[in-house]
Amino acid sequence: MPSYILNMKLITKNVFLFTFLLLGTFSIFGQERFNGYYEPYVKVGYDVTNNFSQEFIVENRTIWYDKERATFEMKQVDVAHFSKLKLSDKNAVAVGLQYRFRENFAKSRENELRFTEEYTFTTKPKATELEHRIRAEQRITSSETSHRFRYNVAITRSFNGSEIKNGNAYMIGDLETLLTVAKDTKPEYEQRIGAGVGWLLSDLLKIELVTEYRLSDFTQNLVHELYFVTGLKISL
Image: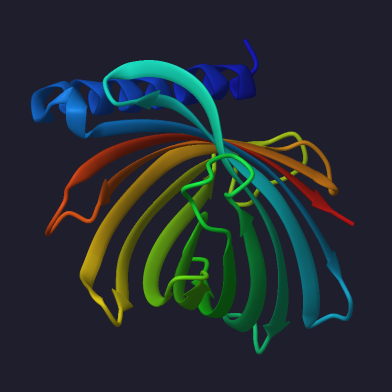
């Protein structure tokens, strides 16, 4: 049997095992504190020059579990744009603009305009790509402006050889810590951990499947959240 088929079976088994372990954890903490979401996205990126690139992202968030019941309810749609400047082989900066549509799906929610500033530091020890990312975000709604600070460390590793080639699958893992502050509310802390797989189908196309577990506002109003994320990445 070809090695890539064996790798795919191992990848799928590990992703499902990770998911079931998380679901078992939620039953311990209590279902009333658990929300489940499905989040598909499409990302289109292209190089303007050797050091400057842009990308456009469209994604939506659908609730599949809320308030102790299974459901299927659209929560929001996001449209975003990022411009990225590569300073060196390891360092890059980026700025982003995002708009989140919420009022179309729930009159009690407010639409959000978001500005993002980003710095990334990337290394490639052996067959692994390790990325450190720092983000500052200004999230603006009609009722308040909040500031969120994010630190993410992500690992990408090929399952075949020392680099990801066309037709290869690869492992994805990341850990992110977030802090949100606003004038009239207490600071909110959030922790996220994700694991998944991706496939480089061609030079133009990637598909990624990720399971992400979040501890939302864990110092005050703890909520456990499970996300199933599917991504289609197009490089022009």
